[in-house]
Image (cartoon, rainbow, N blue to C red):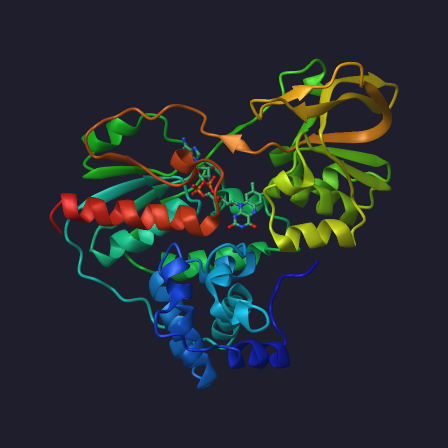
Length: 392
Ligand SMILES: Cc1cc2nc3c(=O)[nH]c(=O)nc-3n(C[C@H](O)[C@H](O)[C@H](O)COP(=O)(O)OP(=O)(O)OC[C@H]3O[C@@H](n4cnc5c(N)ncnc54)[C@H](O)[C@@H]3O)c2cc1C
């Protein structure tokens, strides 16, 4: 798998497909209201500078989103699908942004006069970045506090073969040129109200979903958490068999990574049906191409260590008359010989929000595991509300 940029002929062919629908359904479907209709029109004229400027004006992570946005937003809205296939809009966006970055065509950062108010943003993932990009348009001085040493939050867990880290860094550097933006890394903030006492007019909490979901089974401590795995897959590289528990996008990333790291066989254990897996058509295709075994309607009930390998005890599941999942009695199967079992059920927020004046919550912390563009949109939207509330 490679980052999904387009070759010259592919790019030209995708641009050519645009029907120029007057209602711009693609723009309406975009959570950050980026308009493919308009940036494609600019690119068709060969004006990559203008196309990139239109993207950057709405999305400070335009290239990142081009590389990783799922097909459920603009692509799904593209009316071209009624003729042959929708335009590969995210890929077109990624390609425009790549060309603009490499050819130095990005517009100079617009410097708005400071309004004298400071806003603290906790967390430097997409929602924090979205909030920052919007706030500086209103003249706020933003200070980002990030507990890790890098920008991007959960984007750093996406395999490099889909999202090279230098793209996240390049988009951050573009935003960070603005004198209204400052960031402190390796800085954890636990007490949000204190920041208000320190002179910040508002605090935007953009800390994401930090708590991995668990199974609550015997032997759970033998499983490797997906965030741990995806942060450093080379450390866990194995030529043995790997099992992944979970059937969502994070699980697919673990599967493809384990394959790329040389695992002999990779198998997914999924409690529901294949059709219930919340993955995109592209992810489904990748599972097929990589010949991944998907064991559906199966629950892992316990895990034990046997020498150097792990054994998973599983049972079959079924939907009861209320549509709820239940175990099917006497269906235990013992699966041995796993070098690694990775738990990839996604994450939820680590603590409940504390309501207080001028403290706002955004991104996956509020919405659970979503997408980068939705997290960004949530940050932008709250930033607009903050600007309104503080009468800017
Ligand atoms: C494996 C994986 C694959 C994914 N694939 C895709 C994809 O293909 N397409 C897509 O659109 N989305 C994908 N996503 C989802 C996307 O990455 C998230 O929806 C998005 O990053 C959420 O943004 P956020 O800003 O809300 O939170 P996060 O990105 O989680 O950022 C929160 C930040 O807050 C920091 N933080 C937490 N607590 C504190 C504290 N107390 N003080 C200071 N800093 C703190 C964290 O270190 C982190 O940097 C994927 C996610 C994962 C895990």
